[in-house]
Length: 324
Image 1 (cartoon, one colour):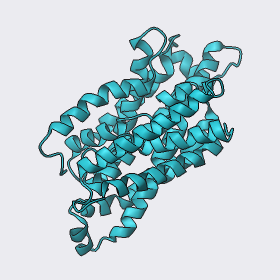
Image 2: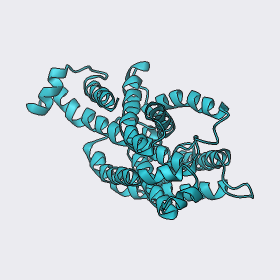
Image 3: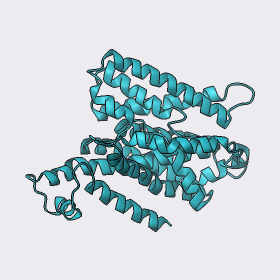
Image 4: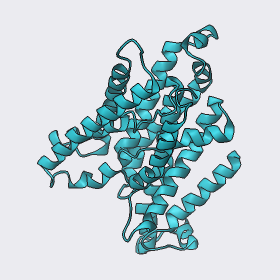
């Protein structure tokens, strides 16, 4: 199954490099790497535009998917997702502040604001969802995340409206898109994503124990607090870096773990590993599909919203939504 997923991912990468407003033959794509000609528009299109777009699809697809898998495991919440719980909105809002208020445009600088926004909102949502005697429940966390995300989204939109010309460069980014990125962005966010993925793989065995509840996990020898802290760090790195690079693309973190769980079962080690493959498959598929749905192009963030919304409705309607 994993080999099939890798094969599909390789095929999608080839399609991402070949398809677009101007289709490019696979042989020409290969020549762009082996015999690059700077005078060829097709070679330039492949190397300067489609390669960064494809690499970001791989990196950010894995980042959003794995961050969702970690959140679902730690909170034991089938609805946990960086987008639904406001993490992406927090990262996006802090990037908006950095770009619009402080005048910071370089992705290497706004990345730190995205990471800060991700961790601040993660703590805030969990605190709000835990208020009251009942403590945190999947529904309370979801409502807190939607509320915080909506408030931050509204504030961010208000800031953009105050200076629409200055925020023109962020218009496509705010929707969630892989297009218009260069290798500078890829090189800036990839180390953070790789570190987040490494932490996720390291804590995957402990997440199996966490799925049994904190008391049972501690009885089995799992260091609960350390696991939660490392999980929070991983989610911050993955969701923050992914959002800084391609914008607040939602539902990848919700859909991917459920798909992988259905294929490989509840073992978090397999879920984390499988999500690193299926997440990029979903994001690259959405990006490629968006190139042909309408004249021009439909951004990947819009496509994932169309795909993810029905899945969210189905999950909410399930009677077993409070447990994985």
